[in-house]
Length: 159
View 1 (tube, helix red, strand yellow):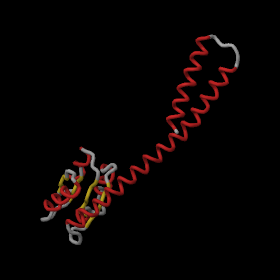
View 2 (cartoon, rainbow, N blue to C red):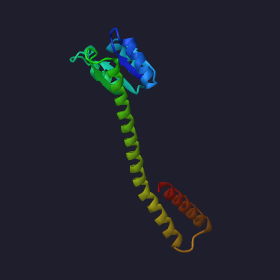
View 3 (spheres, rainbow, N blue to C red):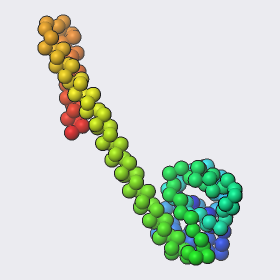
């Protein structure tokens, strides 16, 4: 879902064009107060904000950013940008946000693998050493072998 904060004669046209091009629902707000309230209620992938509606001295810009969450926020001047340019900038912002999420996901996955690999190796080594330590009660030996097998499975999954 995309939030469009725009108060102009072209607002409805811009909303429809954004929906057509992004294939996402666009929620149109004409005031900053409405936009902040709307952002508090739902999660948005992007927000297009008419910069002329923001008072630099107010807290509204901060509230938009805070309640926008992970939404890509694009500020624009409708006097200079037409609906086509707004749509293009939102499309680019959505693409950037998607790439950023993918990169963060890959980095987190890599970090988790690195952290788990050391732990799994330690479990394998400890269980092997415990099994070689000498005669063990059969139940203990059975449990150690089970732990070793589970660690081997984890190790193979991490590769």
